Image (cartoon, rainbow, N blue to C red; front, top):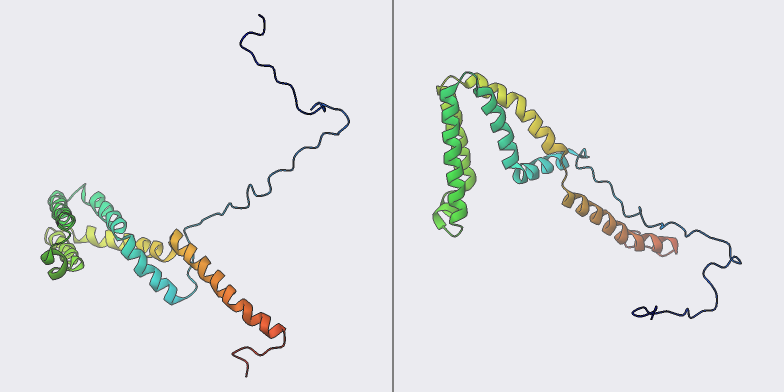
Length: 198
């Protein structure tokens, strides 16, 4: 009656796990525990001017919205204390730009919006119209100071920022170039002439 509902298990081996014949040996730590840990730093100095120019163009294309928001926020903050009319016009132009971008997203197959009117042209036209409105409302000093302070930061970030996909592609390119060069170095060690040696 006392063992009702319980199951007793009999060990298969005759050795008891707590035998004193074998000394205690701690298990070795997992050596691969930290070997897959890679530190990713998104800032990197390009080696050549061509790489810097390519990185600026790529980052302006990929992060252009964030750069624009950064400049817009700084301009908005500088206009708050003294230029109410300029601030209202800036908000109106932001609203018009947002409506245009939403219209582009709402009609992805529109021939007029995507083929006839280039998005870059329309956005540049809206940016120029915003600058003209700010100049006409005597906010050119605010605009100039904002652009002079924010654009070096934007270009510095565009030069130094490297995306994770670029790091992976560079590592893959280096690994593939080493793999391609390995057979040529083995041939030269064996005494055979490679394709470049005549």
